[in-house]
Image (cartoon, rainbow, N blue to C red; front, top):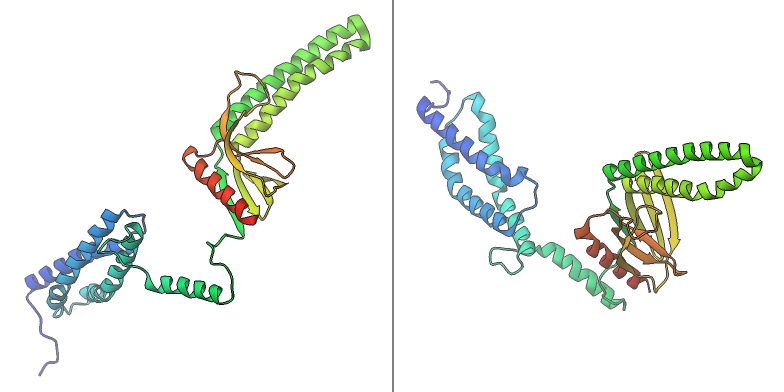
Length: 300
C-alpha cells in the first residue's frame, strides 16, 4: 500500500492557497508597518484582528491537505501568524489605551504599571519623595539649520566685503598720494563696514548650522554643527535663569530695517542673554522653552 498522502483536486488546492495568501496579506501590515497610528486606525486594526481570528480555522482547515512543496512555506507562515494573533491584539489594545485612556477596547500595560508602582513604593519606604523623575541631562535640537538662508547671507557677506575692500584700496591709495600716511586714518571708517560684512558671514554660518543644547545641571553647552565642523560653547546658568521667546537679528546691522527672527533667550548666571534656536521650528519653540524652564526649576 502506498504511503503517499491523499491529494485534493487541483482546483480546491488553488482556492485554499488563494484564500491563505489573501489572509496573510491582511495580517502582514499588523506586524510589518511600524508607524504612528491614530486611535481610529488602531480600532480598525483590532477589527481586522477579530476577522482574521474568525477566519483562521477555516483557512488552516483548507490548507491541511496541501502537500505540494511550493505551498509548505505558505502553510508554515499561516501557522506562525495564527499563533501571534493574540499577542498582536494585546499590543494594539495597549497602544489604544495610551492614545485614548479609558476606551473600553483599550488595555493598560499592567507589567509596566506594576514596575512603576513598585518603584514608587520602594522610594516611599526609604523616605524619598515621589516626585516626577527629572532627567539628569536635558538634550534638545533647537535648530536644524537652513543651507538656503546660510548661502544667502554668505553671498551677501562676500559681495559686501569684496566691494568694501576694493573701495578702501582705491580710496586710501588715492588719498595717500595727496596726504601721505594720514590717509590711513580712513581705515577706522572702513573698519565699520568690514565688521558688518564679517558679522553677516558669521550669521550665515550660524544659519546653516544645526544647533543642539545640552543642560547638565546649571551648565549649558551649545553645539553648532556644519558638516564636519563643530563649534561648542559653554555657559553657566543660575537658579534664576529662565528661557523665554524673543527675537534676534541674523546680522550685525543694528537698524530698524534689519530682519529679525524668533529665538529662545536665556539669561546666564551673570545676567547676560544667550540666544538659541534662531531658525528653529516655530511650533516646537514653546514646548522647548517649557522643558528648559522645568529642568532649571528642578535643579533649584
